[in-house]
Length: 186
Image (cartoon, rainbow, N blue to C red):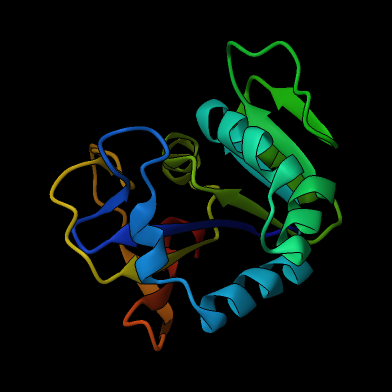
C-alpha cells in the first residue's frame, strides 16, 4: 500500500503562507544546506505530487523556468502531478492531470503499487485528505518566526485529530522538521 505524506513549511503561529497568495518569504529563514538536502531526499522517496488548484497554478508558473536548484526543478517538472480542482478543465504542466474527486482518487492510488504520494503546500487539499483519514504522515518544517497573520496550514475541524510524533530534526537555521502520524491513519 502506498503512503500519503503531507509536506509543508509552517510558521510558529501556524501559517503556511502570509496574507497574500505565495507570500512565502519566511521560507528563507529555514532554507539552508540541510533543508535543500532534505528536499532532494523527498525526490527519491516519492513518485506523485498532489496539489490544490492554487498551489498547482503557482508551481506550474514557477518550476518550468526556475533559475536555481536545477536538481529540484528537474524533479518537479518530471514527476507525475495531480491538480485537485473542481474548476480546472486541463493541466498544462508536464506530466499533470486534473482530478475533481481527490478523496476517491487517493483511495484508489494508495492501493496501487508505487512510491510515496506527496501533498506539497495545498492546505485545503491536505485538510480534506486528513479529515478523510487518508494521510499517513504529516511532515512540517517549523520555521522560527511568528508571522502574525496569514493562511493557516491546519483548518478548523469538528473534532481533534491526535498525532503521534515519529521524529524531530532540528536544523542549523533554527527550523525543526517534525514528522507526525495521524491517529486515524495508525
